[in-house]
Image 1 (cartoon, protein in one colour):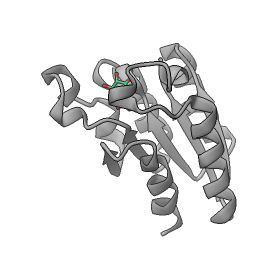
Image 2: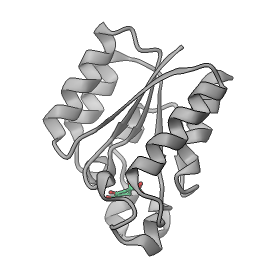
Image 3: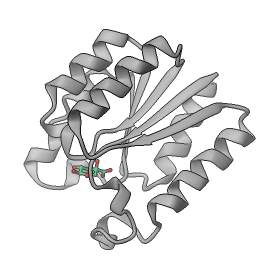
Image 4: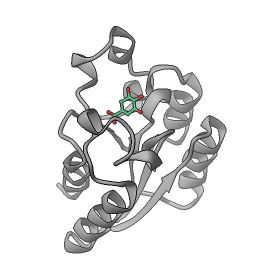
Length: 141
Ligand code: DQA
């Protein structure tokens, strides 16, 4: 089973960025953790991060032609603004799981709206970086 993990803007700054909200683990640590869990579960995983909305849209489209079976997406700030990412997820119709490290429902009101989430069948919110591992296990089941 082929899984694509997509991370949006500023997630490459994990460990540096607001550690009280996002934790002290850096982005490399997160990727390592995802690859290790994927190996344990015998899932084929690739990870993509971009600070650019259009690149994320293109990557979602590419997933269709690469026969990706599942998408795990943390669109970061684009969660709350991007209809383009929502439309791309709907266009490819690949089962998708939305992950947020922090509990977006307990923060500012603008974080309570998730456009991308409207195209996702599962939402894992506020479980820290372990949320990505839960999302991998979700696909296995
Ligand atoms: C985030 C939450 C978003 O509101 C924020 O813009 C991010 C990270 C999270 O994982 O908690 O960049 O998606």
